[in-house]
Image 1 (cartoon, helix red, strand yellow):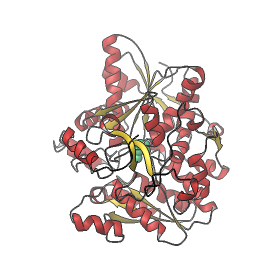
Image 2 (tube, helix red, strand yellow):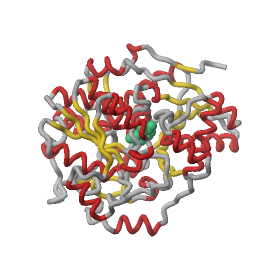
Image 3 (cartoon, rainbow, N blue to C red):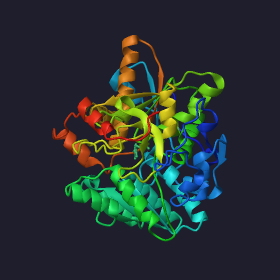
Image 4 (cartoon, rainbow, N blue to C red):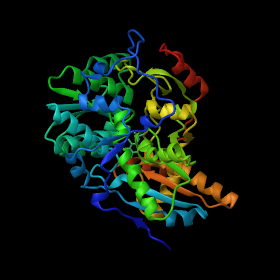
Length: 453
Ligand SMILES: *Cc1c(COP(=O)(O)O)cnc(C)c1O
């Protein structure tokens, strides 16, 4: 048996982020001003983001230097390990070789601090005192609270009400790192009050929480807004994952045929896959990258590619992306995270151009894969990551049926140690299969009056 765990030294933490915009054959269409449907310039983003991040958002430079201060904080948990899943392979009785990059080693337990630290850094540089954000299951809010504490800034978090009630310990983590947390929809913003007036029992959604956080940031002095996924600069920061993984695969004397990652807005998928897609662009390799999403929030596999808002109220620019419609609220019985209605514009363009693939899974299939992984590899995966594991299982079984060995690289985006209520629900039979009907998707999309592409 060759090595189980492939490690790198601190000096091998990447010094630059990889910007896939430089290599994409078709660049994403520009964001539009919803009032005029004209392309917006970078200045339009200045009220909510610091210039350092706006420059990255629109950059087509292939490599962007990682500031030393950010790299120094990365050293707390990076480089993250690449692990060969011998136990999982054996349980699946597959000839496939399965590796996973483990991002659960960060203090917040997921990949999200990779961008949170960078975002806090650029905000601090420009004199920002407070960052306001939204969070779904709580991983992003905890990552940003951590990052703000490292840079001595305040952090205010609007947490989707359903998770606020189901995940008390995520909220506690934010509090430990000094973050303030509100259940969303809240009475604190016009956006929240509008939603509550329509539906006092609204479980909330990421789209609603984003509207609240933007409104709050715009109306607070020395405050900016921050997003934990979807945007180009967020995907950029996550490319430390794939750059490390590439070095580690080389050390293992192997190369992935298939890369698999769970998909919410696209950041951990992009982070792992983009540095390998670079090889496809530059050397004509044919590495496949598959994004795994829940069947109850299937924007990549059943959504439409068109302009849509990033939030529910319609405060963001219009973005060209795969979407289920900005009014879409996923069913509350869905336990596995990844509840966002849209997808990042870069990932959407790559999918449109068939340079990446997408697949959806039912939640029971995901938890079955996650529990098998926990029993054989030890780590309890975040429920989001179980979506990716369901794809890994499918591909490993296909290798078995076809009698061929492929190398699969999977992003274990986080651990699930704070998500045990979702596992409890699975074991007690309280997780239901949930597939959206075509009528539900069509009715959400029918409400859109944004430009088509
Ligand atoms: C947030 C999160 C995701 C999904 O978000 P992406 O931006 O698509 O990566 C997946 N896994 C974990 C553990 C997360 O915290």
